[in-house]
Length: 317
Image (cartoon, rainbow, N blue to C red; front, side, top):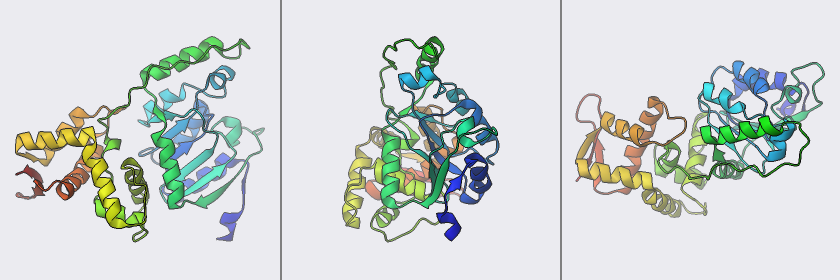
């Protein structure tokens, strides 16, 4: 539509909220400066905060001038939203469940969103997102750091000590980052690796608002570099999938057990996840369904069946 090509002008926040529900809700919010008060209002107007990720920037000068608010972490924790920090982002980007995005100049502040009458003059535009764009978006996610209590505590103390003091700022030193290996995000999200490979070469399209996010997650998570050949993509995915510590540990557990009911496998995954925050059980169940399919595809000794009316059983033989 021609109207979609027009710029969105201030108040950006009001117009965003008018359209977000028609775009499948927010999936990813990226902005260097986020204030808790503005984020709280934004989240209050969303029908759901499920599946949202937020990426912001906490540099020393950001915290000392007050443009970045470390207490955004507490707001995210209230809604069970993972918060990430990235040292160099300057873009302001909302990606939606529909696969479209909103990109503009406004940070997630009261003035940026135009919530007070004297807010900033901002502009932005709605756009579709191509495969190359999604790859870049997920590369940003992969290179971001998940905020936990330790990181939040350092940022909050730094902000309280140096906020608008005008002092020469010492380095902002977060705790040493030890990447978590046993996370749901490290497991596949698409029901079949063949679907991921077909998408990678342009042979299939996302059928619903969640598919594009799952497909792009898997292309990036499993290091797909060459999109020219479906068989090559399947090989690349398989190598990365089987080499991941969480997957290797899961295979060992299935082998030692001989067979596991679906509930037993889901409980094992939930117990071994080191995600922060701990994932919901429905998220673990969804990940378990997908993992069953991928293990059966890539590990000849593993198969699963439904011997009873409801429960799946996975076997190593």
